[in-house]
Amino acid sequence: MRILLLAHSYNCLTQSVHCALTAAGHDVSIEFDIADSVTEEAVALWRPELVIAPFLKRRIPESVWRRHRCLVVHPGIAGDRGPSALDWAISEGVGRWGVTILEANGDMDAGDVWASVEFPMRDAAKSSLYRQEVTAAAVAALTTTLAAINAGGAPKPLADLQANARGRLRPLMKQADRAIDWRRDDTATVLRRIRAADGAPGVADAVLGIPVRLYGAHREGNAPPPLAGATAGAVVAQRSGAILRATVDGGVWITHLQRIGDDGNGFKLPAAQVLGDRLAEVPELALAPDARVDGATWRPIEYVEEGAVGYLHFPFHNGAMGTADCEALRAAYVAATRRATRVIVLMGGPDFWSNGIHLNLIEAAEHPAEESWRNINAMNDLVREIIMTSRQLTIAAMQGNAGAGGAFLALAADRVWARDAVILNAHYKGMGNLYGSEYWTYLLPRRVGDDAARALTQGRLPMTARAAVAAGLIDAQFGADPEGFRREVERRAQALAAAPDYEYLLAEKARSRAADEAHRPLAAYRAAELERMHRNFFGFDPSYHVARFHFVGKVPRSRTPLYLARHRSGAAGAGRAAQSVAAAV
Image (cartoon, rainbow, N blue to C red; front, side, top):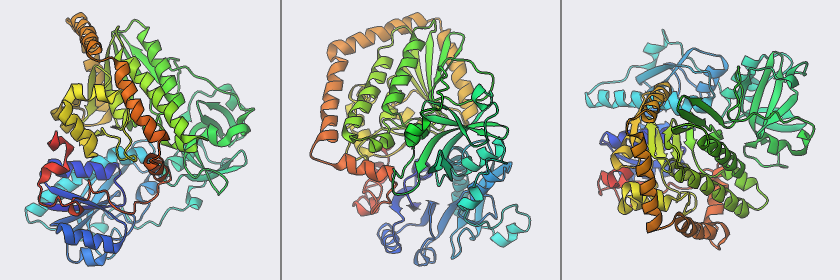
């Protein structure tokens, strides 16, 4: 089918839907929902058989839905209506939730129902549920819907479903609904409040006299000494940029804050950076990556060893890695290489493996160009350490999505595995034509060749794990769900550590590295990449700095990029190969 995707932004759900539709053979173009007139123009140019809205913040124009079949992806169960569907579900602690495909009409979320797919709710943040369960359910529901349309089926009237449905019309959740009463709310309630607002809009609160929004809440289950006798709501400890606040029955770590008002940065930053000197008397509750703890706690890096395999977890917020994060991860990795292991598995985090340099921290720096330079060099130091590992075989196990420098960080490992649902964005150019480093000019062509490397980095399009395997970018994809992926990673890693040809594999790795170094030293790749990056950071062209400012501030797009809006790029009749990097590769 000829399909137009209409979306507020090219977020993770939109990318997954785009990739799934393309892989199924549909002819897809994308338009950002900027104004009714823009949408009408896009429809006129593309002449779609179907319009799909995976992520919208307002109604589809009547001039469009009356003339074209329009499907809306709603992150709620059948009968649920309203803009805060997932927020209410998390806040109220429901056991099951879902995604429903509706046919658009004049009322928000009130159209006839094509399909609804439910899932059990994890004890997790809204952003995590959205990236994992909601995205998987949306793709499944759309697949069912398109099959029904092709078979000549019809949707079910919402009124017929509402009699027995659990869903109902719910209003926009306001800050009054999200507010935390630290004197009365227990830890479970505090976690639900913050998690229901994670990603956006955060929970409005005040910390040490500063009005902020709260993000990134994690249970503290070990009752450390600072919590004993602490007043609920008090900041009792800090760790690696996060703060520990007491609750009436325990404590929660809060990793990020967003300052409210005109006197501070209006974007998320590590909590300690927002609070600054007000934390001067708050103790640092340090926890080494390899320290064993009995109960739940939070730390940015964790190292766990099982037999001959070491697992390094680094669930950085949104996959962003600041200078200090890169340095800390490099130190933890070096420590892992000095242990008597045979395999090291780099696990990343459950939602993101890595997305490269930390644009929010760079934007907040006094000199963003200089911080960009420090950050990319710290990333490069980490990547080089992995490439040069000689005593172990290494695996990058991507539980979650990876983008930009994070995608190339994964390629530094000897083996690269990804969960089935993972999306990779192995390119930088969307960030103001950033050239990129992380030794990508060495790591990428040796896996896919020069022509495919150019297609990947110039195409700016996402790639599924399956397509990445077909292209030779990664080695394997498996695991229908995160838990299944982790179990299979453990099985395969242990098998690799016990492989009878392990010593041969290690020796072959050393031989290949020596041959590559003789052909062209790693230092030469790094110098050439950084020469281009220096121009991006310090040169006359401000594109990178402008794009970063817009990204960090979540400035709405004023137009759809031509690599997505094929109807505006003259690609309407060029065939589907141009719309998919996988096809180009």
